[in-house]
Image (cartoon, rainbow, N blue to C red; front, side):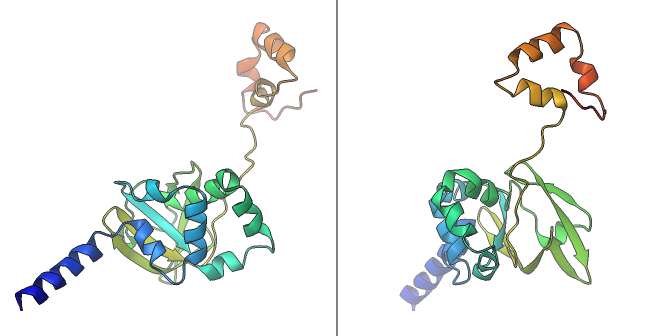
Length: 194
């Protein structure tokens, strides 16, 4: 009986010691997410201390992406795939009971998601949380029914940003700076610059 008790306690400790990655790896509904996380090299990151909140799209969610897109993402895992995966992770533990309607949450990727609560259902952007609060030792996993996609090509904030980030406009950048027009062109605008 003592051996059975020790085995049972070891199993409980093992279950409680799962990370957010372990939930993904051990889920039959998240094989695509598992592959993506492995290909993007994010396993060790998500096994870290955290805390993390992971919004985990199911295999069906990935299957709903446009044909060929997933293969394209997996072909360049350090590019857009990593950005998309990090858009599903928050560097804090957010249990469903702590979420509120209209809440804006910044993801590890840097952009935000919006929480909507309608009819007792929780949505992250347009993805519905289908299973909430899968507790791990380093955070929590919420299963969602769609893939969250950040703006992968955000617009520069101002026309000055376009000039400064262009390798073909170093002379214009110097001239705008010398003329003292940087703060003006960083204003509300709108501006059209030729």
